[in-house]
Amino acid sequence: MSAAADRWALAGTGPAKVLAAARARLQKGETGDRVRLAVDLDDRERTQVGRLLGVAWEASSKGVTLGNLRAGLAGLGDDLTAVLTRHGGAPHNLRAKKVADQAARAATNAAAYQALAAAGWPDPAVALAQHRRWLERAGADQITDRADALARLRQALPGDNGPLPQLADQLFGDTHCLDRDQPLGRLAARLLAAAAADPGEEASAAEQALTATAWRRAWAAVGVVCDEVSSTVLVLGLPLAGHAPAAILSTAAAGCGEPLWLTSRSLRGTWTVPAGVRTVRVCENPSIVEAAADDLGAACPPLVCVYGRPSSAAWALLESLASAGVRLLVSADRDTAGQRFSAEMLRLPGAQPWLPDADGVFEEARLPLLLADLRQASPANHLA
Image (cartoon, rainbow, N blue to C red; front, top):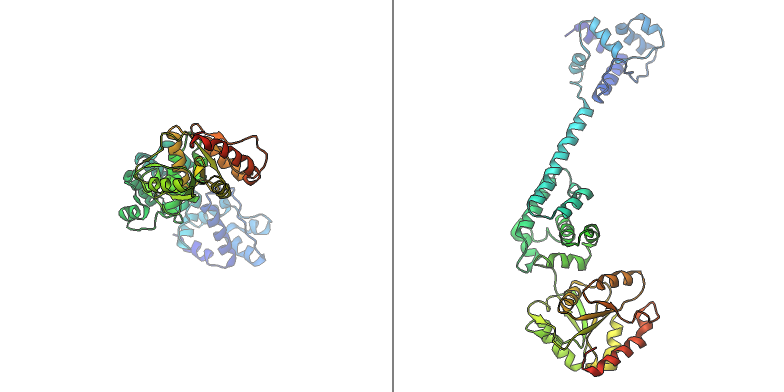
């Protein structure tokens, strides 16, 4: 330690500016002797600094470099880092610290995604989550906790068709943490949707996962129930067989020719498609069902209305019908939205367009032709 160096450091605003600029450069990792210090010195301050760097420097128009400063302090038997440490604390290499922090965060993130894979989340879903940085959105201090929570969730699935709030309470002591508007719930739904998607469809499924229907379907696929009474599908002339509430209700409604809203809850339990039902027509708009009920009543062949984008109840019904070998004839509005979910329904086994050559963007414009087709199918006792 040099008392002379300390006196110079405290001699005025000139040395203070130079030392501050030197600290800033060193903390950025700029340590070479040729590094110039960005300081604006007036005449008085230049004189103050010149007491260390020499008269020749003071008389010149040269700037200050780290090399000048080091040489001047060495002439006083001192060291730049030591002087800075005594006057403001040791200079830390912020660039190196930033690199180290980034490396530590990367290691933490990688370990979090590895934990998801180790818990049984499928590799494509984990890869998508890592690519989209889903865990990082939770904040750097919550990534590990969020990954641990998702790992616990995966290990608890499939469920036993219990309600989602009950599962959330059992796992995390919070009945609402898996709700659709909660960070953990949103992330879990995206992962579930991606995990269940066909190869190459993971991203698309995850993007749709937070819609009400996709949300219910994602949880239902792993044995967890979400608000089953608000997910509905409209039917007419479709008597299901079995002991499920949907079977009892639909048989009664079909007998009197009355349209019936079935809920996801009513479709729980055992039910099957009667042997005589080989074709079911599917429409988008309730007005089609209402017109068919008025026109044909109990003689209407089986008709299902999804009422816009199919709900989880609609998907449960349609997928079961398709799995039973029923031919689905699908109609919808031909606007952008209708074409999108019509294409989704047409991916079901045996599904075909219903009157694809009929003119009209909206189903109501095709109503006369749709009713005529239903009438033609009616005399065969609901067989088409």
